Length: 160
Image 1 (cartoon, rainbow, N blue to C red):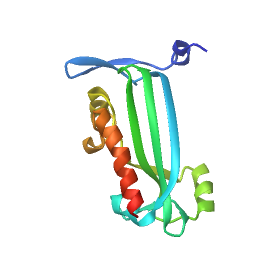
Image 2: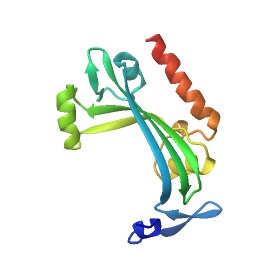
Image 3: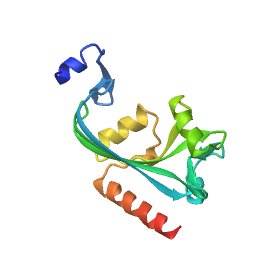
Image 4: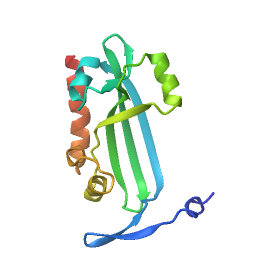
């Protein structure tokens, strides 16, 4: 299937935004994604969460999951850019065992708290903040931020 054919039935509108016009929804024609999930200190993850209602998914006593996702968007309506997300799988309002976590995942009861989401272009950052409601502090627009964020995470985890 050709890429244009895939998007054929989706209405693609031009929307004025600042001094330019963008297409909504933003189409991503060529992308690559890598995701890795690691065990991490439950106590350290809890310190990073904004609410006591958020319960990290535990894998063992004192351990929870951290998800690191890297996206390379090679072709999109807003141009090419890269993004790295650091997040924590969680359930809301109650703690779950690993078995019930996988069952809850099937029913849509599991979510991902996105702790950091740096990007490599200003337009990706600004659209994330203004259209998707992503906190500005999550979005940085330099490749140095992407590299620095990953190494900072490694340093913190080694200390726990």
